[in-house]
Picture 1 (cartoon, rainbow, N blue to C red):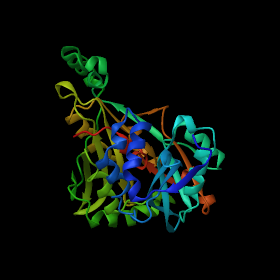
Picture 2: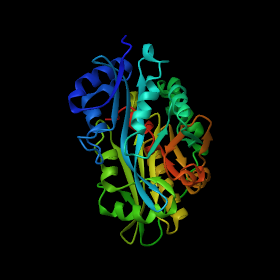
Picture 3: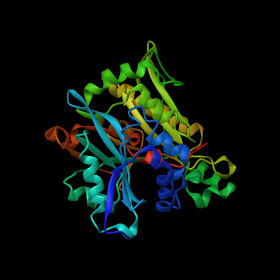
Length: 359
């Protein structure tokens, strides 16, 4: 172990060495070091410039021993739209910890032109580093769950066909749903492409939240259509042909006997017109699709009072274990350090990215 540890920004020529490091750092998570997934994650992002990839490496000589990996996002901050970094993967090999290397990585990332960084879903080790560098803890994004088919949700039961079916049958009276009959001139339908109507929706919707990750069509397309090994289901709510809101769902890969243990509402967005009606229609449509596919349960993470209200009305209940949220910013302190100003969903966390493929 050298006494002269260096920090540098990632260059394309470092890719092979970095993938090798990730294989060592995450031996039980091969997706992190998969070349196709990594390329999509850090090079194909529509906001990435190949001459300025926001990944920083810790080196012991020529050997990579840690990284601070982020992806660039556009962040709505009041009336402005600022470039920010979303911290995705921060890791230092165990034998190099306790030497200030993690702090050096984060400080270097903070020293870029990006005045704001955010982290959603960190562990205690990385959280301690962020706190030492004056990142502000914003509490937890709320997690909600609705049990649909308990026989499919409980692994020990799902493997026993007759028992599984009996448990699901007994639970049927509790599988409460609401009617999703759209009003005249309105419809809930599958979305095939993220077209310009999603940009129009975001322009209208963004006025509702002082702080939110921008949901432009090209970013949504990258996140939910181009992610390797995954299929997301997208439902759009339309009134007279105009997109008023959408919901994105992810269904886990079916196990034996085509049992799907869990599904997730990954993202939801709605415009300001009749917002609660739109939210309710989207949530009901999501639940109905999960019921049709007999998913064991439906989970989501959300920081938004209106969506939370709709979830509770549909019988979702809050779970104690939910992702923590931290922010570091040079400007916009009063705006960004107020939890009530934020709109966040599961899709704004690395949870949705590092879920196992379903294809």
